[in-house]
Length: 205
Image (cartoon, helix red, strand yellow):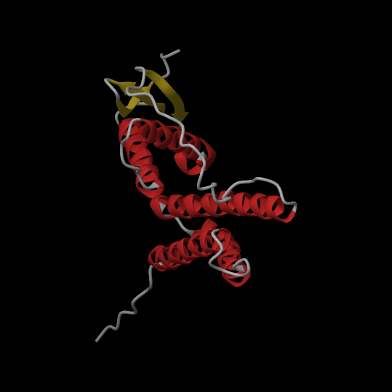
């Protein structure tokens, strides 16, 4: 009788490691927030070192992963970690130098700026994508514009992972219909923020 050997799927295993990495990254964010709010006595160097080691290890093996969605998920987490470490390092330097910086707790007597009752209609941001997995910085820029506009409009925040997945899905779907690139637009209409996508073809200027 023939025997069959089950071969593990490297993409599935890599995806499981990304889930663990995402949990560690959230924990690291929480610990840094606790440190800057005075609830931790020292920065979370151990957790940060563990996350950094994991990111470097997965970066070395990611080239062998053929699953587009899994690779895009890793790129998203990698970019997120890089941006956070830059933010944390700047906040630490500012704290050591005794000057205002990011993540500093606001004074209790600080006056919150007033917001307009209604945002003016118009286009907030436009980004064009060919391959979002290789354009992580542009995905992040579009996301930050989208979230900022929603915050000003009083709408709830959207998770970056869900936003990045939406962009990737829309690009793939519109390119399958004949588009060469896909343009996304963040716009305000009647006080509400909307994200729209349009396929671009070779004949478009």
